[in-house]
Amino acid sequence: MVFLTAAETKAFISIDVWTCLFMLGNLLVLYWLMKKFLFKPVRAMIEERQKEIDDLYADANQSKEAAAELKEQYETRLAEANEEKEEILRNAYRKAQLREEEILREAQDKAAQTMRRADEQIELEKKRAMNEIKDDVSGMAIEIASAVLARDIKQKEHRNLIDSFIENLGESHD
Amino acid sequence: MNINTSGPKILWEFELFGLTVTITETIISGGIVFLLLAVASYFLGKDLKKRPGGRQVLVEKVVSMLYNMVGDTMGKHNLKFAPYIGTLFCSSLIGSLIGMTGFLRSTTADLSTTLTWALVTSALVWYHNIKNNGFLGWLKGFTEPIVVMTPMNIVSEVAQPIALAFRHFGNVAGGGVLMSMVYSALAGASALLLKWIPNALLNSIPFLQLGIPAVLSLYFDLFSGFIQALVFCMLTMVYVGEACPPPAEQENKDVSKK
Image (tube, rainbow over all chains, first blue to last red; front, top):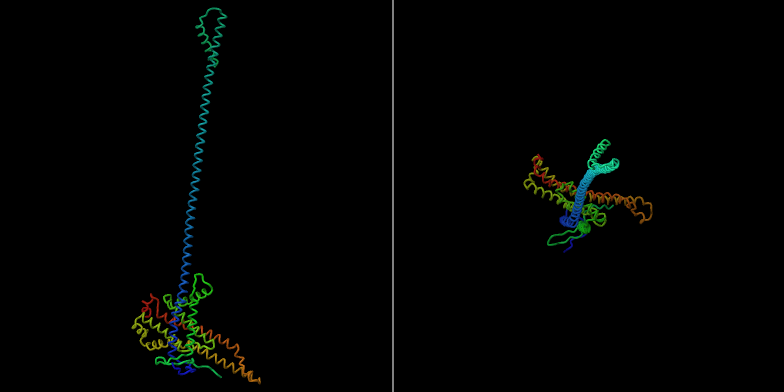
């Protein structure tokens, strides 16, 4: 290595091959370095973040749609349940009404039956009482007549006579 | 008056395997820019988290902006060029701004640097043209729209990298020259204003150099460096983007040209 000259200047407008080569090498190596250490990683990071944000938004949209769908489902179900409830109520009301009518009818029937039976009983009692009175009266009449007449009257014959008399009497009194 | 219009200083020159290797200021600055960007991209690109902190938010914002710009200018199918455009932009911007340190020369104030970058752009354009149209198709492209245009087309193809290189170089180097002219002018003006002071030390203070150059430097170094980096990258994107049409358009490209 021999120093030939020092502190000499090149012309203002000049081209130096060594400078050219050195600057070319600088530029190419710098290009490689900056691409490797700066541009590529920064760019990759930006893209990665963008992708993550896009994914997040897509997820959020999906969740929102799912929630809306669920809400719609619940609302439909709720409406269905309401309708069902009303149907049940209507049915119960109708059944209750039918039952009420039935009970009323039964009660009326029972009452009517009881009345009829009571009437029959009364009629029977009346007849028996009449018969008893008739017997008593005919007995008394015979006794009175036998006492009055003091003669032997064929008891059976008289009794028939009196009975028919009372019968006639009773009929005219009814 | 001392106006610095020289090129980069040659710091060392030595023989290596029979070749004379020259180390200039530009190479030193270039190496420092390289190290700065390599270390910065390593620290900015490590420990990336899904929930970013302040540093990562900023880095992601800038990288997204870069990809959006490349996508808008070159089309979504050409996003693979974004890292190269980003590297080129950072190299150009830091290469221009490093001149503001005062003791390092801007790498972009050397035509060698900008020409190298411009030739890389042209190489990309040619490579993709040949890849898409075939070698003969690429040559045939020079005769369009009519055969008479062929010399013009060749000239414009050659002029493209040269124009690209000189635009960037001229703006940065010209800004530097202008700044040193402003400094000299302000020194002269200061000396003129302080001539009445009898003290030789006091009247040599270039007080006008304080403050005024800072405002100009803001434009010539900071703004111009940023704009030139943007312009260089924009033009690279346009040229390369033209050579790489969207896959669907490639088939009816010939039809639409007629």
